[in-house]
Each structure stands twice: as C-alpha cells, then as structure tokens.
Figure 1 (cartoon, rainbow, N blue to C red):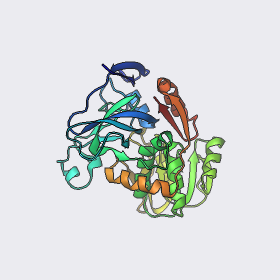
Figure 2: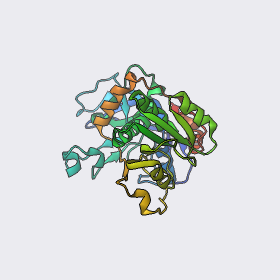
Figure 3: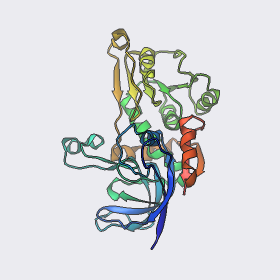
Figure 4: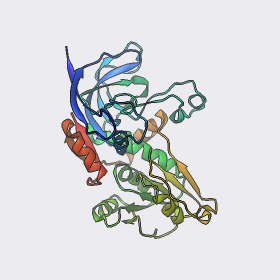
Length: 329
C-alpha cells in the first residue's frame, strides 16, 4: 500500500497539519499527479482564515505543477508522464447557463482546487484532466507554479482593465510582479502602488520595468486609464477611483476583500466603473500560458519544503517575499 504526505487545514484559524494517507486511484476523468511544486497564494490564506467557502478538512493549494502517474478511464487527452498544471478552477457542471454561454468561471456548481476539493500542498493530488493545463517548457516546476493563479488571475484582470495605456497596480506581490511584465511588454505605462514605505517592493517594481513606484497613500503621477487592486484591502477602492480618469476602470482582482468604505458619488461619476474578477476559464489559461514565454515573464520565487507550509503562509500574509512562495514536496 502506497502513502502520500499532505498538509491539511482541519478548520478555519488552525495551523496546517502534516498527515499521511493512502494514495488514491483516479476514477472518471481524473488523473493522479505527483506534485513537483505548488505555489502559495493569498487565496490559501482566505481558505485558512475561513473567509471564503471551503470544505474542511481540506488540503489547500491551487498553483500545482506535476507529472501524471495514473490516468482514470474517462481521461482521453493526458498520458502518464505528461507535465501539467492544476489551477483554481477544478471542475464545472457544464450545463448551467454560464457554462453553456462561455462563462464557466461563473458556473453555478463549480469545484475549486484547494478549497472544495483537495489541492497541491501534498506529494500527490487528483485533478480533473479536462481542467489541467499544459506547462510551457521554458519554465522549471517552481518557476511555473505562480503562473497558474497569480498569472492567470492577473492576466484576466489586465484584460478586464481594457486597452488603456496608463495602468496602476495596487499591491505588488505575486500577481502584480507577473502582470506588470506583461503590461510593460504590451507597451503600457505601469505604476506600482505598494504598502507605504515598502522600498523593497518599490525597487523590485522598478526593476521589472514599471515607470513609477510608490506607496498606496501617494497620488498617481498622471491620471490612470485603469487600476487593478490585488491587495485584499477594500479601502483601496476609493483611493483607486480618485486616481483613474473619467471613463476609467477599477478592477478588484481578489476573491475576497475587506469592506469597501463609503465614498462620494462624485468620485464614481464621469462614467468610472468598478469591476470584480471571478475565477478563470480554461481559455484564460491557454492564452496566458502561450503569452508568458513570449514576454518572457520571469517569476521570482522563494522555495519552501512542504512541511514548512505554515511558515510560507506567514511570509505571504506579512508581505515579506519578493514575488511568490512555492512549496516543494
């Protein structure tokens, strides 16, 4: 009998616990993947804190890179040995109005990797083969992991921000450090807004090609065409609204955000808009993973052992990392 190791959240507010369990056999369209790397995402903190819907106990992690070692009878396009990525969107119903109209990210009955099905903080994981994504060969396992959520959600947010040339990024962590590179490659002027006084993050943003970097308490150097908020801080929404020009957009990229304080209607007037980004589609994944090596996007990662998952989450929570944290089983 073969066993796997995994880090489990038993209930919100509790630290992750290292456990072992029997390695499962894939059924239906699932494949069994030996995990090579799994990124640590801020969404994992929301799962750990009970701020979004999850089932407990659960193994978090949805930026998974690994190799297929067993294939379920319903899987038709993956073979043993294939290197794949497993993103947040784990499965959709395929029959609701959203799925039928090309908006599977809004599915009424979705399954989410690392929240409502076990994720990649483990040596092995089951994943629906239909929702696995090909990993560009230009990236090693750890470098590729952040592309699967920080990159994908960042890219969807950038698309929703529109074609404007002046883009503000509020919160310069895993997602912003990836999408800033894409926006610069597209010829946009990127302005990075960090925690006030965080010179390390500001210097990092400038090295990646941002035109300006400063604290979120500082005014934008020019009116922005759009702002993307990656930090889970609702108070940034009124600040970003004041920074965008008439007709500008504020895109809230997180799955969870603290309450947005009230603000004068005058700050929204002038056909400004506030949008949210919900999950991703498989098409988002295919498009972004084709673009990433052309930029080329370079991910900055700090590697942790699987059993150091609590330390990695703490580093993400406190903003101590340049780029992304990645667990290596």
